[in-house]
Each structure stands twice: as structure tokens, then as C-alpha cells.
Image (tube, rainbow over all chains, first blue to last red; front, side):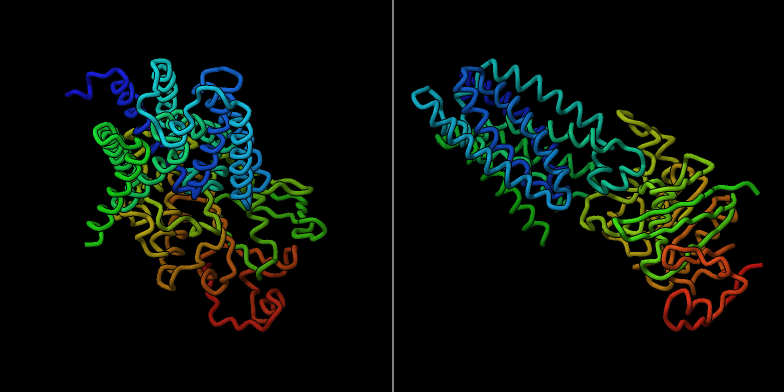
Length: 264
Length: 241
């Protein structure tokens, strides 16, 4: 197939494969903890990370990972301070991220930054360096989810009960927030900052409709995500569409189809 | 009989409001104790201090064993649409014991199934937790509290939110666990009528104090009315000998 004769498309598929697995893995826990908003918040901060990296001349993927990671730990502290109003920390960080991104982008005017690519995703902008970073960090995220799966499940089901039973919830919550940050920073290269949290939320929401236990929920969500990302990359290449928009549109179509079938 | 729990001079206050005022009590191994009293009497605070969720302002609690089971009052407060099945929920009771980064072994899952059998819920192991009735869910949560083989089981208002038949079945189960397995059971309840024929002792609480004169042997309408602060009619009072 012609599509596989281009190096940039091979890179796009490799990056797509990794983010299509890590996004729903993280997304399941976010959705069930009613923290879907955090994906959106961190993606706004990721934009500021891209702008800041460009301004100081470092690799935008590495810069964004570091910036979002640091911001996520700040949000976690804010979340603890406003334990009963966790949405406050999200709102403050979202507005702060957008404000900072706007300032930094205006300061870096004249540089060759592809703002549209970071906003809506891009197939051509994924470099070999990105692939190395996405693969390394993606494997770490998958490994951590696998190793902390039962603790994350318990904390998601009942955080207080998990704490009483002796599970170190603060350490695991911090680690989880860091994993969310890394996933956002990696996924925005393909899906775009504005749609990155959708890839976390929609496959998980779709899986919830048909799963009969938690492991099935995770398996279905990854399956829906992989199908959305791969078919989205194909379609966006052949139809010259935004990859992020196409991937998310397909995931929504899958969600609607599952809901219609489930209703029958 | 050795003591399972020793509470010595425990005082607890939220700001200026004293909830527990110099509480001391002991609970022996193998006892089935109900802590009763009206809302706001401090009984849930006391059990939260016993299990270590709250730290007292002064005084101490000594528990004979580290391995305790706890069924909190808000067990039903979980997301009823959560996609976990019954066996997954019960297995959570083993996670801390199994340890970080480790997976449950076959023997752990056998323990989960044995505990579900003990509470008569094995047939429901693959059901989503949210699809069960309140009484069935309560049994699953008791299994979750029991699966790590605790020597003491603490329950905070376990009969709230379940129908009368399920309440009776739940109390029968607790009696069975206490008598047949020797588990010390400490239960907070405001439902004094349901428990008098099951428990070996009651501890009456009101306004942050223990009423020493209140016991199974002399519990009567006057005593309960004084404890609850309004006229209480005791319809049946049968306790085990």
C-alpha cells in the first residue's frame, strides 16, 4: 500500500499504536473517578509547554512532558487543598494554561512552530526523535498501569476504603497524575491538544456500556481506541483530513453504534 | 478472656465541639458487641478512632491484632454504575495484604470464592456489583472485609439501607461468623430492636459518653428513652443467655 511507503506515515502509525493503548488505559480511571476534566486541563497546559519549549529552543515533546508533569504535580497539591471542590483546581489550571500558552506563543512569533499541528494533530510532524520518546515513555506508562492495576482499581472504586486498607493512595495518586501528564504530552502530537482528552474519555465511555467487569472495560476501551486511531490515520491520509478530528469522529461513531446496538 | 480492644481515656473534638469525652472501654476476644445510641452520640466517631481513621485528641486505642476488617457506614456510597463484578470487589480486600506491584495468585482467588461462599454470594461472583440489591451488596462488602481473615470485624451501621429480611439475614451471618469462626464483631447501630437477640453485649452512647448502667440485662423503655432523648417503646427484648 502506498501509505506505507512514506517514512512519516510509518512513524505516525507507530506513535498512533502507542497512544491508542495508553490513552484509554489512563482514560478508564479518569472517567470512573469523574476526573475526565483533568485531560482537558493538562492539554491546555501542554500547549503552554509547546510554546515554552519553542521559545527556549528545546525539543517540544520533551519540553511539554516536563512542563505538564510539573504542572500536574501542582494540580495534585491544589486538588488536595480543595479536596471537596476538585473542579476548582482543574479550572484554575485550564485558564492558567491557556493564558500562559497565549503569552508564550505571542513571545515566540516568528518561529516556525506549527500551531495548528499541535492544536488538531499532525501526521507529518512526528519525528524519529518523537518516536523514541513516545515509545520509551509509553512503555513506562503501560508497565506502571500493569504493576499498579489493582491499587488503581481500588482507589478508583473507593479511595477512602483503599486508604484505610493501607494502600499508599497519595503516592499512587501522584504517580497516576504524572502518567496522565505524560500521556497527554505524547498523544497531542497525533491527536492534537484540543482533542487529546477525547481519546482518553470516549473509548472508556463506550466500553462502559458493554463491559461485564473492570478488566473487560479496559480491554474494550483499548480495542475501540486502536480501531479509532488506525482507521483515523488511514482516512485522514487518503481524505486529507485533520488526524485528530478524524480519529475522534470515528470514536464517537463507534460509541453511538455501541449505544444503538445496546439499546436493542 | 483476653481483650481484643482497649480504649483508654479517648477524647475527640471537632473544633470546640466535644464528640467523645474521656471514653474508656474494653472488648474481649470473641465478643459480639453493639454500640448503640442516637444520631450524633459519637458512636461512629468512636469506631472510626478504633479502626484508625481518626486520631483522638487524647487517650489511646489498643487492638490485639493488626488484621482487622472494616465495613464503613458509606459502603453504599460507591458509584452504582461502576463496572466491577462481585469477585473483583471482594478481591480488593486482599490488595493491601498481597502488596504493591504483585498480582493476585490462584490461592488468593480461591480465598475470594471461599469468602463469597461463606456469605452465600458465590453464585453472583460474575455479576456487576451495581446490579445487586442493597442486602446482596452488603454481603459482598462483608465478604470484602472478611477475605483477609481478620480477627476483628468492625461494622458501622451495616443494616442501614437494606430491607427487614436482608437485615435479619445479615445479623444471622454476623452471629455465625462470631460463633463459628470466633471473629470478634463490633457493630455500630441505631437499630436497637434488631440486635438484642444476637449480640453478647451492648454499649450505649449518648452525648459523647458511655451509659454504664445501660446493658442487655436492664435495657428497658425508660433507659432507651433517656438515651435517645425521646419516648422509645421496646417491643421485644430477647437476648441470648
